Amino acid sequence: MKQKNIIIFVKKIFMTISEENYLKVIYHLSNLSPKGVNTNAIAGMLDTKASSVTDMLKKLSDKELVDYQKYQGVFLTEKGKLHAKMIVRNHRLWEVFLVEKLGFAWDEVHEVAEELEHVRSEKLINQLDKFLNFPSFDPHGDPIPNAKGEIPTIAKQLLSEIEAGESITCVGVKDTSVDFLKYLNKQQISLGTKIKILEKESFDGTIKIEINSNVIVISDKIANNLYVK
Amino acid sequence: MKQKNIIIFVKKIFMTISEENYLKVIYHLSNLSPKGVNTNAIAGMLDTKASSVTDMLKKLSDKELVDYQKYQGVFLTEKGKLHAKMIVRNHRLWEVFLVEKLGFAWDEVHEVAEELEHVRSEKLINQLDKFLNFPSFDPHGDPIPNAKGEIPTIAKQLLSEIEAGESITCVGVKDTSVDFLKYLNKQQISLGTKIKILEKESFDGTIKIEINSNVIVISDKIANNLYVK
DNA sequence: TTAAATTTTTAGACAAAACTAAAAAATAAA
DNA sequence: TTTATTTTTTAGTTTTGTCTAAAAATTTAA
Ligand SMILES: [Mn+2]
Ligand SMILES: [Mn+2]
Ligand SMILES: [Mn+2]
Ligand SMILES: [Mn+2]
Image (cartoon, rainbow over all chains, first blue to last red; front, side, top):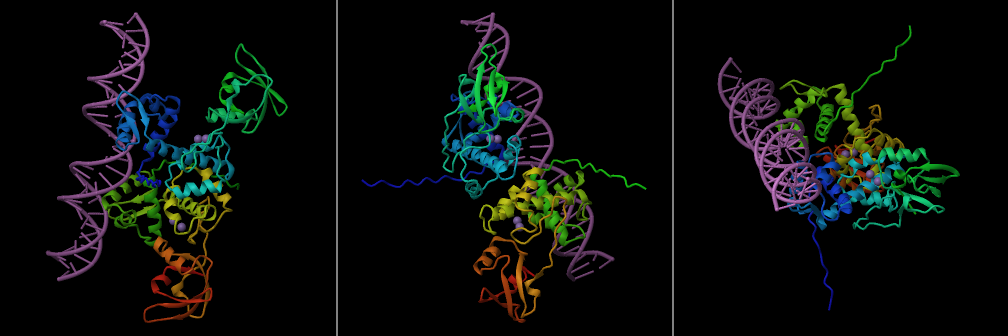
């Protein structure tokens, strides 16, 4: 029996920048809380009020981008998830462009990428992807969804989970704030930096490490925000 | 007597995308009608209504970006002119990027550049400028203002003004519409193309020209929209 | 299991940017 | 110089996305 071709027509929905930002935040939060994303959590991330979030959730629900029932938290639909992943794709590809081609530091790109991610052109983003040689990870080590929405994976652990004596490589940051990235700059830690764990202090969680033959001590806060392999 | 240094503090004004689009249109129109830009002309360019334009002119006037007195047409202030030139700079640099780096055709770039031009980052645009080797002209032959707002000039004439027998080079288009650019593609005319004027028909203004050893006839409409040198 | 605290939603208002319809001013024609 | 036409402005709405304040539902604590 012959397999029939299935053609899915995905109607191009027009989305405002605000709608896209909500969708992206819901996407990021739903990875952390898989039993529905709270109104307040969204409000916190977008620096807005819970009442504004409720309004927007109704709008996104009308467009079938989210499953929303009041007081029950919100979920992305497949359509919503794909759209969110495309915004993340845009964001991270632009971050790569800014670092690799325009000489930005990894702590300078996020804000600009927040604007560039909303430029609507499939050709633009796919050609940019090609121009950058189809990168798999952005300047902070986060995976870049491909044109189909598939997300590359990498085995990684937090530095805090590694035993003393091991030698590992920095492959990403969990906290991508400017302050944390600038701290890492000061300590000469960047993606690809080789780190040797010398000693773990169980009392307060500080860790003594060696980087480029320098020995430094980092706090548990740092160790809980650095991904290594 | 010693020259004193004059420091001008230009307060960074926040502008919406809509305000920037109005400013850009007023800038382009004021080059054509130096005795004040009409409300209707602006409305036509932005595909909106005259009443909306009046509203916006008041807003731009409050921000001191335009000189506006009702019924008298509108002028850009120095501040408004500089801001408009920066938007044009953004637009044209992005067009160069799309053609030179991402392989877009010259008839595909305008729409995308209309969005990219509004991304707010001085560093972004200046680094892009550098990355592109400080180009002076965009893919349609239009001049790109530098970071100070200075605009390169080039001696150019319309093809219609050239006498029979002359050999010239295409350096720009007056009409930048997709339809016109696609017509030029079909006739194998692009920036840098060498053209020899064989014969001018005074009755209807058609011109017989030679391009890459092909002889074709073009209408006066075409000849009035091609810049040559 | 009732009371208190927290979270979420509703109701009503506001600013930005657009629109329609009508009034006012400027220009062109008779 | 009147009258007619065109241009521009005003007045009053609409939509989007936000807000505050108050009500309703849910969760936590007693
Ligand atoms: Mn980012
Ligand atoms: Mn990133
Ligand atoms: Mn253009
Ligand atoms: Mn152009």
